[in-house]
Length: 339
Ligand code: PLP
Ligand code: COI
Image (cartoon, rainbow, N blue to C red):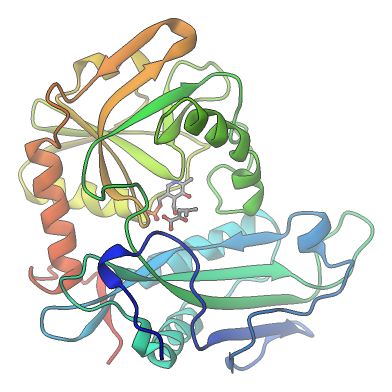
């Protein structure tokens, strides 16, 4: 058995022992099945291949200080997947089956759960696709739910360190009343060029404004945005951003710490007033923002003067990671134990 270098993992795919699958046929979901095969065999006219009937999720499991395995808010991911399915007319996968599949896939791949203190975690990737054939533009009658895992390290190089982002004005990730609030593959297809453009310019990630007016902040690539000023946690309200479970959790933690929380339109110029800012998500955790450049407008918003993460970002990060690792009490009932 190959030894895994836990401390140097990146955010990527690693083959593990098992995945869990469930088929929807004749109007109902079947039993959860354990598979070791990485490939899936689907009809060439499956709606996921032609009409984008594809939804995915992302959540993490952690080996705690006490040796127990904790999953962070799986019910919230199950509910968001159900919303996505409703958004693109796919069969919804029940929350109890989702949590059962999460436990099953983790237990079957136990040897891939990174040890406590390594900084790595086990990323879980649920996927739900239309597998039934259609040639006309219509929803499928058959679906497949799959969940696989991969041990991962930090999403951005350097882990908890600051990054620079570039505002994109030439591409949109999603339309104002489109699928931006759902976790569908199409949104990520539309983000690929913007993401490449930002990387080519030397930035960690692309930074989206609202697609209609290009006035307000939407989100940072595959992560939500938050800004901190005057003891207030401020995060954008928009119809085209993904409702991030990490962001929801941070809003609660900020409130617990005695901060005010505002969810509202955030004009891009307001960036010049923030004492701290960050990108947040399952993969990104909290990624403090050093600087955001709006190249087309010849503007540069420097948020961290010394290039270091701010105090509030650090406090939020430690609290969140502490709950996930079992070092901090889980006062909101966010943890599901696997054992
Ligand atoms: N925004 C987008 C576009 C994402 O892909 C993600 C990742 O899931 C997030 C935000 C963060 O959401 P969460 O905190 O639920 O992982
Ligand atoms: C996540 O944070 O789980 C994501 O889905 C981000 C990404 C790799 C698409």
